[in-house]
Length: 204
Image (cartoon, rainbow, N blue to C red; front, side, top):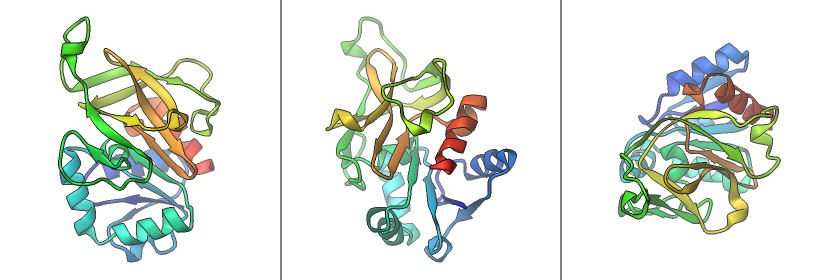
């Protein structure tokens, strides 16, 4: 059973629908009690870093998430801003992040690139796994995923980068450390490849 954390950020219903189409049981979690028996957790997110952290802190679910993920070591998948808040901080805001994977969310700076790129980075882009990573199992060609973001996760330890994409620069678009995973793209909007990512997470 997969529990999708509903802290009023992210398209929880789209993830529930994706798992229903895969024939995999998934539940919405809105309170700490909903998470007591969780064995896998998805942490979605849209919007700003500080708003995401405020919403999670006010949801009453942060403490049990830390117990489940940091102590019981159940798998967690952060999506979009849900991945960024796994970092220690962000250039977008002033609040500390969860700090579950060392790094910082940084803004794309088009002034450093040879061409001026619009922000946010929006649309389909190719993704290159850097290792034989279980999230990308059965994806044997260079896949396309849907992105919508202005910030990216800058890992302190390159070994935590599971896949990269390019938007003026190569950036980490999938990360992992132990039982903690994150993807910058939206698997629930990425058709076949996104469904494969969600299934692979369920199989971990």
